[in-house]
Image 1 (cartoon, rainbow, N blue to C red):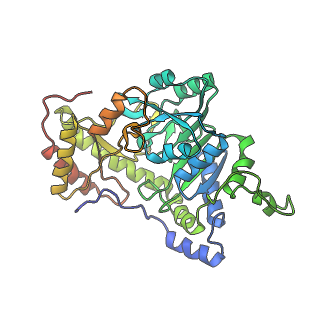
Image 2 (cartoon, rainbow, N blue to C red):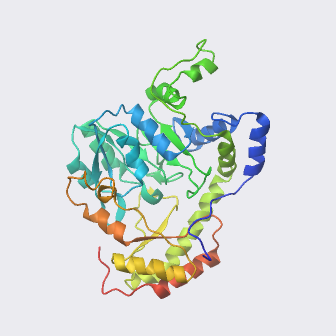
Image 3 (cartoon, rainbow, N blue to C red):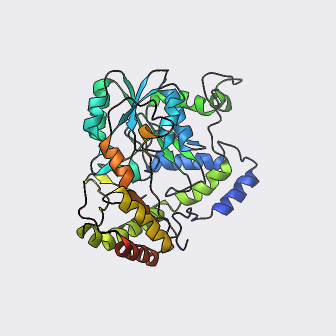
Amino acid sequence: MIIPFNIPCSVGTGGDFIKKALANGHISANGQFTKKCQEFFESRLDYRKTFLTNSCTSALEMAAILCNIKPGDEVAMPSFTHVGTANAFIRAGAKIVFVDSLPDHPNMDPVHLASMTSRKTKVIVPVHYAGVACDMNAISRIARKNGSVVVEDAAQAVGARYQGKSLGSFGSFAAISFHETKNITSGTGGLLVVNEENEVIRASQIWHNGTNRAEFEARQVDHYSWTDMGSSFGLSDLNAAFLYAQLLDFMSVMRRRRDLWDAYFEMLKPGEERGLFRLPAIPADAEHNHHIFYLRFPDRQARDLMIRNLATAGIQSVFHYIPLHSSPFFASQYTGAPLPNCQKISETILRLPLYHSLTKNQVEYISSKVLALSPVPARVSG
């Protein structure tokens, strides 16, 4: 490929910080750079307490433990999401209730959510697809009505906001990803956000393999022991060092992605006007982080042909997700109603390359090929 779909972000002095972590003699979890990263998120994004984890899925698994998920507990989430969203709760024995997407965006539809939830719903997991905020006002109202805990899957949403407030700060808990495909990365890694003060100590114990090691290190107890469920959820300080270098350039990384995203949008407007595809829909109260630039084609055939056409031009484009309710693992278990919006989005969405080292010239080249090679439809369906 001339232009791959993704190249991991590598700004800053990550190599120097990794050498410093080695020199410090602490390269396992909870080292100097782990603490620096957590302090950044707590001071800059208004999170009450954060725990750097070895993946976003691990952060969600911690949230499932904190929510005391038991076999049979209902957990509502969109079907259009990464499998990690569901796995974290499935492993705890939850009954997953899948919610349809909005007609014009992959995020969960609050109206459908309201119809699918009740006092039995223990947890609601909104997923902020592409760093675009779900309707957190509506979701929060539904959660309060049912007594449900909100766990934000903000895997793609670092730095994004809703009505001026950071995504990840609305729910009792939230999970963020630093996978190599994200705006900023530690290679692999994640962050658990704990916004409830009375859950911080327990979250720390879960993070420390289910022990009160933090209290021991603070000399509050004379030994540490097993106090709760937990696991080795922490991130190596080598990875944290690489991440911290990017955090120092956080705003410049975000501006760079915004400029590239905006360039795509402007260059591809003529395609939407000609009915070739639809551009991303961004709600007025959502300040997104320009994580994904996607198009929606009239049907699956047009989308798949576009992928092949771009490949011949040396451009790698991809689609995701296969809806979880119709996936090979879950389809035989699913007894709910069809989720037409989710299914339609899955069949028509196409992601274009978007990463920090992508150039404006490359965006122009990709856009020109999209406009030239898009199949001409009879009409663009909703």
